[in-house]
Amino acid sequence: MATPSGSLRSREHPLASTIEQLHVLNNSVSRHKPFDEALAASGLHPLTATGIAIFQINVGKLCNQTCKHCHVDAGPDRKEVMTRETMELCLKALEQTDTPTVDITGGAPELNPNFRWLVGEVKKLDRHVIDRCNLSILLLPSQRGLAEFLAENRVEIIASLPYFLAEKTDAQRGEGVFDKSIEALKELNSLGYGQEGSGLELNLVYNPTGAFLPPPQHSVEADFKRELWKRHGIAFNSLYTITNMPISRFLEFLLRTNNYDRYMQRLIDAYNPGAAAGVMCRDTLSVGWDGTLYDCDFNQMLDLPVSFGAPGHVRDFAAGKLGQRRILTGRHCYGCTAGAGSSCAGATA
Amino acid sequence: MAGYYHEEDLPRFGEMGKNAPELWEKFEAWYGAVFAEGALTEREKNLIALAVAHAVQCPYCIDAYTQACLEKGSNLDQMSEAVHVASAIRGGASLVHGLQMRNVSEKLSM
Image 1 (cartoon, rainbow over the protein chains, first blue to last red):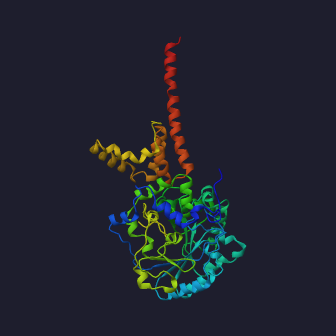
Image 2: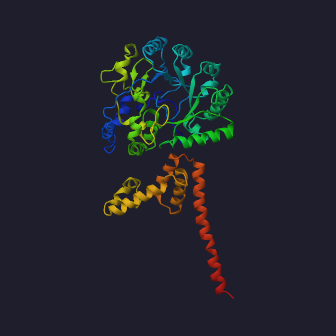
Image 3: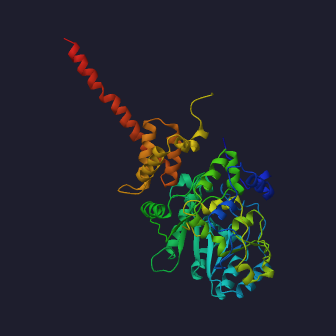
């Protein structure tokens, strides 16, 4: 049986609605206890921010790929992209802080027509820039010179590569994506990325290719380093393991394959208080394509903006209030607290 | 009763501690220690468990250790080879008993 492809939006799937996704998550069977109960048992309720170390900007949902697990429901059909005016508001907000890192994500963030301008402006503020890159974007004719641009601006690249074998990677990210990813990685290596002493950081992201938790980060990183070098002569710095969130397209996969209850229970059974204490939302602020502020990119994709009195739009940015805000949580948060924990920078515990 | 094996029984394994809690606690502690990283990695131990699960043909164990192997970073090539190891030993164990057959036959025959 062919598996569905394309964004949920393009398929007019009911789960394209965040209301429907929240309905599924909030009406889980009773043994899926609410996340706040788990937090309370760990002495972490209510969860609060500890500052803003990472200013994450989602510059849009447009993407050249439609990965099956995508929490953004990104794809070529998505037209939501951040305008230059909203980027200027982000820069004004950044000027008010000493936040050291700006993490640019999407979609494929490079498809935003103002991506390179934004990188340049953030570099003028002397902040470290991360580009969450899907690799295949580097090969598009419209993106000529992109890899060189990233290297010249010393941009850290965090690139998705769910496995070192084509079969598993293509099963998640689309036919032919693995070969393109390898070609792009070779190009990045040739520019110095991932090479010792170059200072050009190239980090890869492992997502499980199904309804199971990621392996221990250190052990799968060793596998990737050995196999990518042996098979393709590719080097990189670190591998981050990220758990699949039970939202958007991965939620659709879980429900369609009758894996939802079991996966949720797996996340809940693997709840780790140490991982909960170190969740990324505590030191990250996430900005949506239209300037709305969120506790994280997952809350952003569920249309759950910052709450409890914190300013809701980047034009009203207030570092003090946002840096100490109370964080909005839900059952999807179990995805960040299971096992060794999960964040945009990999395991947390 | 529709059948003897039910997927939903797997998470109920702990109920086996209800009438013999001390024995269950000892089993749990020993089981946990067995699977902890030691001279063998956790990944290796889970591959062994997957192979043994096939040898003893326990559907609960196959379910649990397929997931565990994936979560320890094994891939389907490695897991399939582990199942072949179990199958080879099972097949070989049958075949080696052929010698008993030959011995009996020799004894009975002129």
